[in-house]
Length: 553
Image (tube, rainbow, N blue to C red; front, side):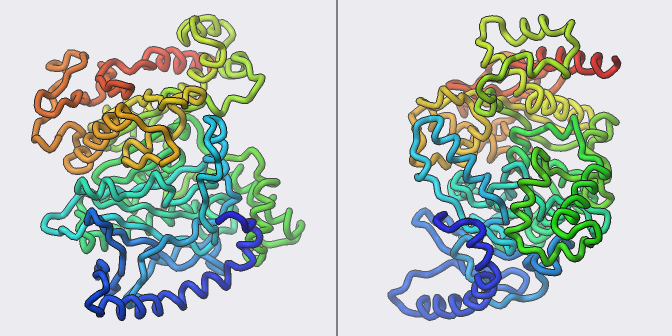
């Protein structure tokens, strides 16, 4: 599927986009003829807002509706503009196949290939999608049983806001749908197409605008697919997690979300892209393509392939993230947490033990992660807290994982708890057989919470037991706001009843997941699952204090 280069794909994308839109009605007609025949299997169909969506059904009874458009293609004059929601009836929509992923350099697929190579797996086993600017589609997994409205999980993929796609194999929702959840995965513009900032742009943060429109579509239409619009939980991993949290703070989403699941992110608590810095890069992009007299509007006529090339040049080393904006991000997450103004969220939040291990370059030293970040007089104490018995590589991994992922996540948890929210913190420690070189890596938890272990992943009985437990917790949280509201009906116990120890429900065999509080309890997910004081709580308290002290100098 990736024999064509991104540039070759781009040269055909205008024609391909037109062909897709012309052929879809013909496909609907053709399938309708087949369905009318006695020998043809019935295809599931759902009518929502005057449009009939024709999907596919598995033997398990799970129905999938793929490639549903939620906004007009953001191409030509709509590039970098406010997404235009789909209005009125589309007639019939063939929702039986995924649509192209949003424009990117291929970094999402490259991430998989790099990870697979490290653990001795053939990277060719993982293929990627086609890419296009015409990419604002979502996917729904459900069942035909609409007797009672079911909780809705809206998942936002990660990829540093430059790569990834909404239907990576681990994000498929069939297993969760079997457990009574309606799963929606959404696309959003990436890289310079979704996160460019320029003073002449009519909107800020186009990627967040895309996600708001997608969630509006879900809110208006998910009932037709069996979902409960009052039980929509938005979730994401890595950049997708930060985007999910930014959505929870957006005025347009007020009162529309029942909760947030935030996996392996948190760095935006400690830093925010300043508008002037974002604008400077946007102006540099115009000058790069059009010279000193070029205008932003003229940039819309530059071929997407050329823009991707310049993204690697002009934006080298830049992390694409939102800037403060009255519509999408009135107050940065950094300022919200620091100012004690975070709303009370129903929140699952956590990180993995070895988030940074596979990103540490060869030849790196621990001093690289201490110098300039912490006062020299704290270095010996930090080394002791990291674990003097650990190798230098393991110390670097623990420190960088703490600074970028774990500690900001715990700060978020504390701020949400103090705001009156119910917060559940986890740390994922499970390491697959043969994956020791990357440990509990960034993204390792995803196949477990979706129950979608790739065939090339070594998966044994322990992995399946951990999967069953995490799916239980996730489904319970989606349905009732507490990860302990298992199907048995057993409620969670209080902190005083738990006493901070590993306590299992006699009815479910699950460790009771204590809400975050001054006791700093977390669910630690290893070969066995237990509730205990977060393993990095003391380290994060020390590092946070050391960084504050450093800032005062």
